Length: 349
Ligand code: SAM
Ligand code: SF4
Image (cartoon, rainbow, N blue to C red; front, side, top):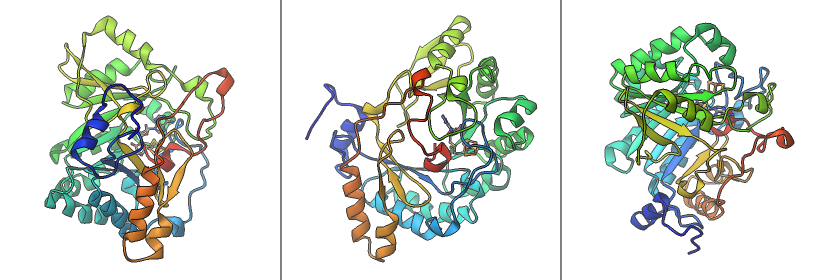
């Protein structure tokens, strides 16, 4: 097996324990992110253009097909599933999918079933999610200013999202807040967001804007390196590096003054590919082996070709065998175009 890194990363150590799906770089694939819809009730400026064309419904995997693909991955060693989108909670009957996938939690085949959401529908679904075995949810909040929230999301209502977060916490779900750092938009608010999140017992993860999909504002205008955010916070707070990676790309610190955890996802200033243990399924059944590369494997055709999972299993194994070493995101004046043409709402965050 070809090992390109000197030391074994966490995904490679995992490969020695779970000899299920292992990529050419020795990384065990134990984490599947599933985008169940490309639609959304918001139009965040860094994620979507104002006038998006959405996929026709016939192109989407049905909930039954989504369950089949997830179950095939679980049978091959995936231990963690994250449901995302678009906005996953706007897909009709999505709770049916959570309910059926929860059988894998009950059987012990799956360690975690989780969700990334904009929070707008959490008021309706938090109790049911908890009932299906979901323990943690990530909610995206980029500002606590209602007017700014409306202008970032174009259509969103902050009060509804905050009520959703209340509902999630009342239902016993652990909430982590995701904030995309946007130059000149919320860069002066990161501290306020952190104090608010930590005050409510929630982790906060700050994310660098990634060059995915064509949008109206320029990426260069939006891009704020997290090295800058971290340096500013370090002036006021004591940030103590933590080792825990929660299976994700975030690097965490403990903020001594608040006692809370703060994560940084820095695809541009700090590449995290060596420990990548994940692949991403779109709502049409395309499997992306890397968020930052165009290559994808079609899993819809094998799902629809036969009721038996043989072809699907074969397609999954073939796809993992071509997972690339990593991405090469870059945003600067010479690279004003997106590196990858599809929007984040298509691949799922
Ligand atoms: N609608 C849900 C939400 O907003 O949480 C789930 C899907 S959204 C695509 C997942 C995450 O991706 C969100 O935290 C969002 O802020 C982030 N995101 C979207 N576009 C991005 C981009 N171009 N760069 C970095 N993060 C992005
Ligand atoms: Fe919708 Fe999430 Fe994209 Fe915002 S980030 S437009 S909420 S999918």
